Image (tube, rainbow, N blue to C red):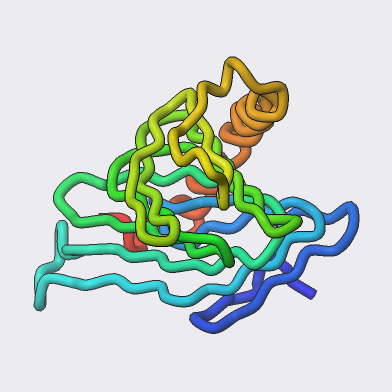
Length: 187
């Protein structure tokens, strides 16, 4: 059972049951919402600081996750004056973000589907690397590795609408984290 006081750590495995959801703030710049029947493992959370500096002391932030199943909606922001990286692996491939982006990722029935709402994501599937820009989605494995326009697919349109609705909740969560822990990893 996870409560607001629960401290998830590297190696933690989170399972969401039927009718459940969970909003998570991995770091102040990386927030996500897990939908029902999702399973997520935290592979790495890292912050690198600049020696004894007291202000603007965070040089880099890194979040590495493994989404084994279900749906996760993510808001990732690159903070000024520091390197920020997000990597999410699935059984079918991996994605990375190192610039501002908002996206939905779904893993189920032997496939991974990624819909990018804002920004850009890099995908690595088998031996191919490619980008997904805002307004596009990609399902893999697939014989066609070119991203498709979300406007041309009913499920992708639902994904975009769901992400738009969830984005406000995620930004509220990030704001509450900053209020509860002023200055914590957010300089």
